[in-house]
Image 1 (cartoon, helix red, strand yellow):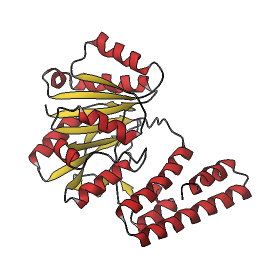
Image 2 (spheres, one colour; image 1 turned 30 degrees about the vertical axis):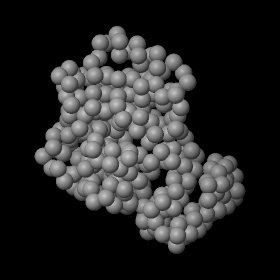
Image 3 (cartoon, rainbow, N blue to C red; image 1 turned 120 degrees about the vertical axis):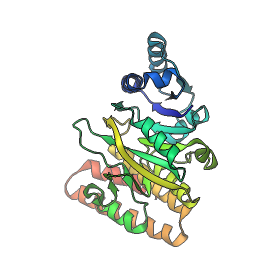
Image 4 (cartoon, helix red, strand yellow; image 1 turned 135 degrees about the horizontal axis):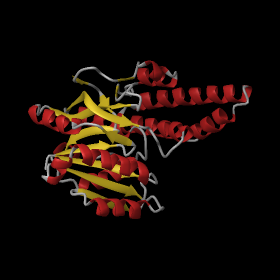
Length: 293
């Protein structure tokens, strides 16, 4: 088998079904001739997701679509690792469930990797439903880049981008990330101590340290709704937590100390602005973030 696609479901069965239907529609032949499979991991939704998904697969007689009910929700990376462990393909694709697949770009990505053995990880382009590009490749979070991140420069393309051509990048986002199965196994998968956010960057960083090449592939048409199961406060708090973990794991003690100072300074500034402007969201969010420092 060439490609195993792994996607997670958490209380969003309607989105997962839309993704599954779109993928099967454009790749029906490849599903039926055992070129591609889809592995859906339900991350302990606790609702009727498993029954709904099982019924959809059974009624449509889908071939090579596997549903794995996870007993616990240990986060995005851990859920992906469960799916990857069952993968038969030589290439594993991690695809967000809030996507609609419009072409065979995922298969093209796998064929491109087959022709370019130096590439271990290949990220693909996601688009908004109006056709505009979503930034899907980024720069590693060095201290300089952390300063840009905390200053909000990410929105201006100084950290994240969408290259117009195939090119080498630091890291690619986990919404559409292809990796050779043997490389994923050698790297021991996603770090399960990261519940959500930055797990894709951390995986690519370990691949980079091991000498593997990471590239970006723009010739894909996949629409991404960005319907997350989390809110912005959850995201900020976890980014704080995970940046600290990343630095403790991969960088020097001096850099870790500087990072803590930068994160605390940003949080205290945001709390101050929140109190002056009576913005409860800012105060609450960054008080929680400080709790992770």
